[in-house]
Image (cartoon, rainbow, N blue to C red; front, side, top):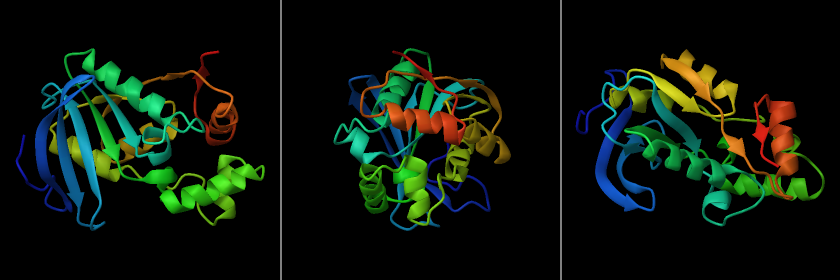
Length: 209
């Protein structure tokens, strides 16, 4: 893998640092990237095994969720999806989680909490974002595509229930061989959230009762 080099001549993404990290899932390689288009923002690739040249590599492109991953909020399924993805990639010879710093579907933590306040008044996750003047989902995936190119990944199988994520990666030139569904076990707090993702955002969700 290239050390501290741009992905492509026109790219503003830079590999900044990397090291092995022992975790509950096993030892993972964490590669940190800095995007010069967003000063101060760092994204990372969490790798299991040698992914250079890999075909049909199992990956998840995962967006940061402070409330779910740090506070263990029950309002979403983000922590469950991240945990499932890390378990799945470490059960195989190699795999990757591309972790993007785009909290709250791209609107940031402060605005996400504002959206939560609207949800307390009865809005669903889509309408809450729209009332704040944002898109229902403002996330972008070009950084993930550039990271995969830098890592030398040939093609990927994407762990996601969101077909739009697959389409975005393909539009950026990533060879996606297939979509791998994630089964979610709902709770009383996130069932409506999951229904909204399925019914209003086009996610293909299989819920485990």
